[in-house]
Image (cartoon, rainbow over all chains, first blue to last red; front, side):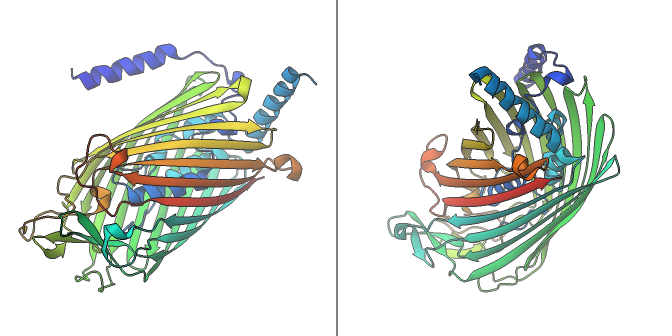
Length: 71
Length: 419
């Protein structure tokens, strides 16, 4: 087994063991707007399109269509 | 009122607002791997509004910094300015269907790097186009999501249109909840077909139409860790086939200018992990993202983003964040080529394929008007970002920085209401 696979398995195991049982009615903090993955959807889409146009890496959020980005 | 009671009331109101607006735990868990599929990026977030109508509008002003005269051989110092209008609508139909529509219009003006040459001392300098380029882009994306008891299925289709570029995309994604919705697995596929018609022959000697096709597959999961933290991890694979060059760029090889030529295929892999944690005592939330990317052009990239979201007076939120980016160069990149090259050999001097790093600072403020307007959600957001790039930010040492590397700033205003 490659070291990367071992690291992934160890990471997933650590995450699974670190998780606590949280009942649905105990999730008020997780429901806060400032805990969302993206706190503003339009802003996040614009940011990803800008990074897509200016950087070589595939952005963390794909952009529909995307356009040329030739500038 | 005691401090403890005030905090409890503040917490309760925040949770009530979140619940009313539909941005609950489920919403957070669902915006996972689907967000990596072309055409589903916006839709993944839209699922958070599955039971509400919502309308949002955003306006942004993007401005690239002028290049210093010492880095330019010819052409304009001024670079691109882009004004963008974005509109987003989500409409529930019955209890299980949500329709989404996103429309974006942007207008671009300014100059662009054309090619890189060597000056008398051997340092690379950029030849810019004149400041005469004007273009506009319209992007439309429509989607339909079926919302089951423990799953969501989304189908989307969209198009992006410019004067010389058209892209059409489709996406399909599915998410399923487990463990009382504490765990969500997701997967998605996307497909895009693009056509470029380089009709401005002043900067491109070959007005031939070109095509490319892109397929994307993504797999991810999100997990509630404890009552104040949640994590998400997803892997995305993308394969592109066709014309992947930039028709508006040239390469200087042996003192002769020739076309920018890149391989006809590219496979990219990206691994994104995100973490959110709320700190009750200070009413703030920590955001941490890390992404590693690799592709068959030998570009490796790391992105780290850290943000802090601070609630103030129940109505206002301030969110400063810092983003670090670094990439290695593509295997066929050089700022310029001292010797001549065979006609068909891959070669590019595009600054976006050069080795560099970038640091950006962002500050965002959101004001909630929901209580005042008596609607489930109403918000005004203002955001400013400053992005700086250069060899000094890169991991490892770089001998010759590409002189066309860009610094830019973005000012954005967004309005959103849900009812």
